[in-house]
Image 1: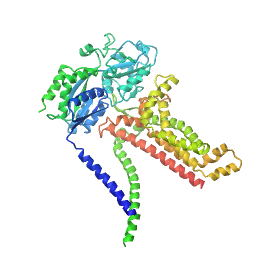
Image 2: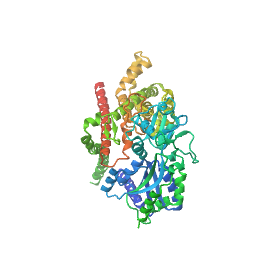
Image 3: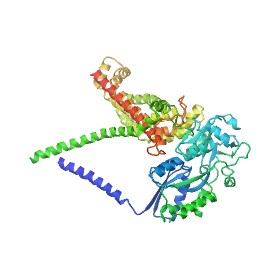
Amino acid sequence: MKKTTLFFVILLVGGFILFSINKNQSRVSPRESLAIKGSDTELQLVSNLVEAFLEKNPGVDISVTGGGSGVGIAALINGELSFANSSRKMDDKELAQAKERGLNIQEFNLAVDSLSIIVHSENSTQKLSIDQIGKIYKGEITNWKEVGGKNEKIALYGRQSTSGTYNFFKNTVVKSDYSPYMLSMEGNQAIVDAVQTDKGGIGYVGVGYVRGENGQPRNDIKIIPVGKDQNSSAVSPLDDEAVRLDNYPITRNTFQYLSQFPQKNSLVEKFLLFEMSEQGQEIIKNSGFFAISKEDNQKNQQLLENIK
Amino acid sequence: MVFKKDIYFSENLPRLMFGAMAALTVFSLVSIFIFLLISGIGAFEEIGVSEFFLGIDWNPTSFYTPAWGIFSLMVGTAIISVLALSIALPFGLSIAVYLSEIASPKMREIFKPLIEMIASIPSVVLGFLGLLFLAPFIAKFFNISNGLNALTASILVAVAALPTIASICEDALSSVSVRFKEASLALGATKWTTIKKVVIPAAGPGLIAAIMLGLGRIIGETMIVLMVAGNSRAFPTSLLDPVRPMTASIAIEIKEVVVGSLHWQSLFAVGLTLFIITFVINLLADVLVYKKYSYGN
């Protein structure tokens, strides 16, 4: 009796293992698929693009996940995926590491993001200059009254080091290390949520996160106009015209990186073409971002023309 | 012959199988340790052991030169551990005493599974509730601008560890022989005196095991601290300061590192340190429990 029971168990376990192996093999389906990972800032935008793309191209799988630009780039270099979103440029060290591993990194310019400085809705500060923002994040300015606000201690909200926005902001605005008192938040939304309830709070987020569901600016936070320096007039990141004329001082390109040159008629090529199409550009605009410059558009064209 | 073979088969094969499974557990423990050691050892060589453990600045992505000191991370973990344990322990022990000594069997049957059910709340949900309700409450209560700090994280981690501590404490108290209690009551001691002077001391080793297991749970907790501890780099000087525990640092940064880089190696070195700390705590628990028992006998 015992023997039969034992055999039964072995049969069951063995069968289960065989079954799962078999299942794995049958998963190699003809369905084309693409995994995109990286920037939290681009997450909503790229999800919108993918959604519209899939509507036009049924029968393919595209997944988009966030985590931060650093996460996407590391996954690209580590060979875990072939398509990464990044809100910052890959640095020389990363490009060298990728080359060392036999990757042929291709850069695609997706959209322009005007990095927005947000504070609590009751904050009376009218505007900030780049220099002031830098000093605030360095920890040299610690009270709102020093920049024309109420007597209230400043609470700094920033992203984690995995974030492209964290690195971009550090290198172009702070130009030093962040104050050690800065709180590290999981993503753009976490910063918006925190600043909403913190009277002394300040945060930086992608422009896609300061608009509500209807595309209008949110009124539960205050978006601070930013000036190039103390004397120049401050501009809102939501001002289309100013951003286009490069009058808003913290705009940046957001990118998509490919680990290899895309093949002709591949899903990657189709998706990139879709992003550049009129419909793609419309989605970029509706998601709160701005179109890339003519020169960058030409670079994209060049990349796609080289696909044979 | 056939009969003998049958016995051999049915007796020895299960023994072998169970033995192999037990060995597999030990094997995985040892191989995890070896893996952490091999992956992390390079960091010690490159950074230097004293700078790694005593440096108070952890800033691998610095604008200037990267800093690799994990002392403030260890202090962050220590603050949360001590605070969470000192919150969870009185509650856990009270619950255990109530369940095993005071509650009617029926109440006990209702309450114990309910308390154990806390363990089934995913820690990300606890973290989310903390972010939405506890952090704003703490901020208001202490009149600070936000509630992302060591205290908030400790309270939530204490909730997460409570079922472990309460349940194992209760098991320990319930397993104290009825004869002890009867003898104490027969000598004229009150119920409270019996609990205090007889039941709790007799259950001592079990209670210590409960505390240690709870502590292990607290130190290893990642999601809650990631969400509500603030995770700033500054060295914590008060319980209302944000802290960045070791687990949160690993969870945040492991996603962005290139395999084999110094940053990657040093995160494994942090993991190794964490592993050794919990290993020593468990070892200590075992030694204490063993000592108590041998003393009692």
